[in-house]
Length: 246
Ligand code: NAP
Image (cartoon, rainbow, N blue to C red; front, side, top):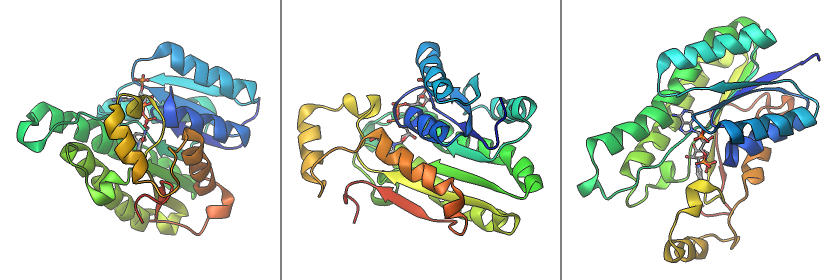
């Protein structure tokens, strides 16, 4: 099986990450699928991508560990011979009012959401530079733009991703590597399924389009930013939120 372009997607076992994997697979892009622990769900994502005719590689590993990220990128290069697209999607929440937020709750979220993305970007930096082309897409959140009560840790990590992405965009632009951010609003996944009905109702009321987003809504925007059509777009933040943050 020959694969012309290859993507590494972190957090690809479910939710938005899985939708990104299958959307890229539909375009014939080979997939390295990272996940933390859900072997069965990750295998389902890989099966769905293979059914679309692309080669896949499953990479179980914690992105908050720098060595893991370096080894993952190396494995992608060893397996496919290239890395064209990096999507930093893995993310967690540990919500609490700042007054009650523990050091661990703050640290865990920063380590996974922000440091994890940084470690993967750093590992992909040289190979993409050498290829003189690449696409990095970081999955932030409108919470990173607007803040949210109970999510000081998450908002800090998602706002940090935006600053980091713009800096990397400036470093890599001359090498034809673009770095962009998608900022989803309220998307229907495991992450939002745990919200109480009252919170869900209130959130729905604040979405001009009056519906939750679907993982595919985010995946299609990511696929666009990863495509040749987006070659001249870098350092941007694209909100996919039904109008919530405008
Ligand atoms: P989800 O359904 O909870 O899935 C999270 C994914 O991240 C899973 O694949 C999980 O792997 C993986 N993951 C978690 N910690 C990891 C780690 N340390 N190392 C590697 N992988 C890890 O989340 P989602 O709703 O699809 O969200 C995906 C991204 O979109 C996140 O960055 C989130 O912050 C962002 N986002 C989501 C929403 C929303 O409304 N859902 C809105 C804005 C932004 P396992 O399955 O193995 O645990």
